Image 1 (tube, each protein chain N blue to C red):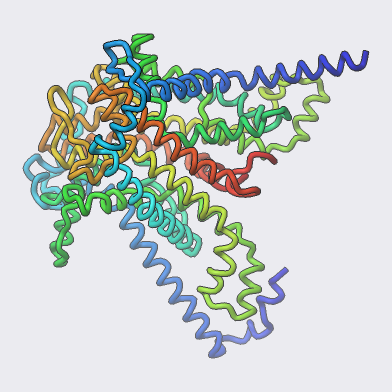
Image 2 (image 1 turned 180 degrees about the horizontal axis):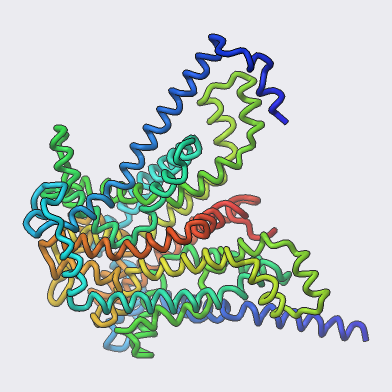
Length: 297
Length: 313
């Protein structure tokens, strides 16, 4: 539509002075934008690079101010894995993240579906409560929750107080899924109803297959949440090293290897790596999830 | 007869809504409503977790506000983070979002590189920054000294610890970048073309076309940023612990907010009061302060009609 305006007739006659300055301006802008881009890229990537390089230094070199390892000590990574407890932290993190993700996704789907597609009194209020829960710091209710799990159910020193609540819907997952389900046209649901599908069947056979990208995004966020969680394990698992997760253990790892920045950085790399690997396989779902929470109403 | 079927239909539809909503309803009651009421109740009790709780009236409240030496510094730090960290994050996020929409070559690579730090687990990212910004052996200071800039003490210096935390927060700007990028790409092209025909300068185009179009997203970024600042817990705690050299374990008590209470935040106080001093009552007072502040900002986020997060459709 605007192409008519954009393309004056002189386009074919080459290099009028005005055109040349315009082209020079465009080139200068390209250079400016891309040098800024490279500068920003350095800010975002250099920390990773330095952490990785330090993780390959010898013990003594890690305490020096060198930036590049003299000898590449790949054995540091083996030392990290040999540290007592490290494999247990992996196992616990995978249990917490895996079970927690499955439970929260399964329990959040029906709630999100009802909030997106059912008409009922109190729907807006429910949605506002979900959003409020999403914004609430976990510390607000931690004292009674801790007393409940630790004193009444005697489950402190385990990850169960973190996993079990996931089976009762997670506010962030419900909100994100609801945002996604809103984008599914009602015609599909009506068509299913005409074909004689009940609510549950419509959800399982029609909505779920269409909601796969949304579910993937929610699952990823939940997995990362559990992987990154420090406060939860600190409250419930700190007394029992057998229940520590990677995020919680990493900090105490620094304590075991007080001055060994190289080993600490190797462990840091190992905690970061899975998250980044998962991201590369599921980039699209992830970015879509971020935009859904932020932009669409 | 028709009224009967209508009534039973309505009852059935209420039942199905209830069935679908039930995980959340149970979760809300058990993991929020009940503990919330208990938090209010405990805030008027003295309770150390061993002896049965005793009623002390407003004693915990006056203790937290008047004698607990960490409360006001924590609130002041939170205010600092809300004003400085949040505004820098919004400005930087917008800047990076605009930059990425202008980049024409290798966009995918740039976008991935800018986004990755957002994914780094907070503990790992903080450990990495504590190492990078280590005044003695960290690569950042050795580079600064090479080019002759006096190197700050970062996490070991009370005037630099919050800027260091801000730097860490700016590093993880990926989520805001994506949100701003999406909003910027949604600005109608025609408006830019019309502005250009009117002879608007680049700044005028930004001021009168870009900004009005993305203002809901700017608001969203500000309010969610404020809520994040209120919840800031893991990063300041780990930074303080690693920088002070105090490691958890038997017998060691971490002085919260190292150095000199400069990295103290409100959520840390709940932990300090509840789980280190076993003063659950006072911890509940701080939890309620956190609750009121967070809800105030959330209400602001949802108040505007057609605004940030829409409830209806």
